[in-house]
Image (tube, rainbow, N blue to C red; front, side):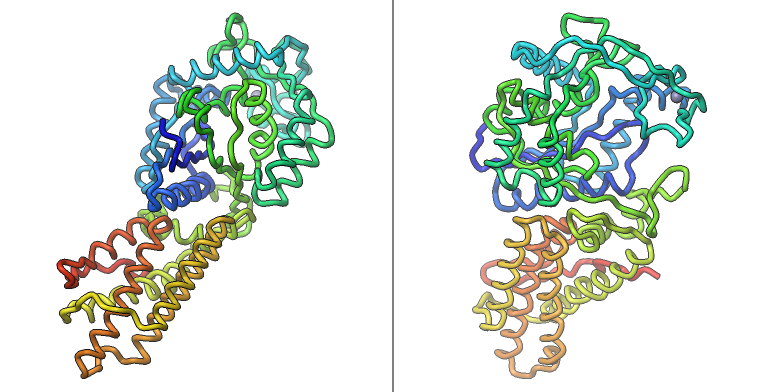
Length: 479
Ligand SMILES: [Zn+2]
């Protein structure tokens, strides 16, 4: 793999015990936007997403559905894969943790960590639910300490597991953080990670006694590799160990709840395995729905496909990237989404594009020179977009583009372009507007890929003459 001009970005792999909700879609759309941002700059992009199929909750979900486990994971993997396709996600790979290539990579990395002396057998003590046939975490239990599904109190059980010497890596991690001041973004989350590591690290359990599911520990068929030692390795699976050595991931995107695993356990595993570390771990906040936590029991889980059907995939992308300030928690409400859609997309971008294309359609426009005020507005927009993208301020990027749209709208109104009698003045005004629209479309390519393509396709320069092919209404108003 050629590591020059290449960009490697990942989403987490998601659990297949349920279908994607709007929170998964948000993380994935953020990764997609960054991938497309690099791609339009001519970089070769490796963009991976996928599903974690090896968890105990997969087994539980299959049982609950009365499905055979392999049939269940195949069906669920299809749902995740096709959801991203329908949302226009440009991932170049889709990792399933039951794939042979992943199993081989996990066992390879395990072997490296073991050879480094970082894997040892120890006693693991935890709360074990017999119904689940699995250990439960305290925060998974009801306030009375019961398993929420089986309504029984789990027992304190001790079993022999393999442990990873995470405690060996405290100093090395702190040194690495010191040398890489932007390793975790946003910065306040990096501070939390640093404080956690400074507090001291305990070794962690990396295996469980074998049940019917999971990747066996090399040379010990009675144990399966547990969660992070399996799931995190998917990032290497995508490119192979050699590929990772040449060019590790530039950016891992995720929601805030798994930052610690990616910023502490993952780099320690890579150090142990003698492999290079990723460039950056960046995290989104959580999405609430109408101000409340999203949960199945409240029945307020939002399906991204349903929204994309009604507002378009670009409508959904626009809302999430514009409404939520990156890194902070955000709130989704259908009312707010409709409002933004109608104001910014139907009346804003859609209306501006339609006006310019309608006026330009009637003229024979030659390529010319922009008026100075347009030169300035385009330069300002490009600079703002560039600056804000390097710090993941997607909302500010879109706001900067919308300033240019408003400027164009005002220009059409104030000049009354449709009434200009002088042919030279009229074609100059139209050339300004067409160039503005064209540049806006180019700037929007990572954010609203479908819309960007439609506008660009509507404006075709052939031998110095513009050919306009007006598309259908870009964003029909929604009542
Ligand atoms: Zn249980």
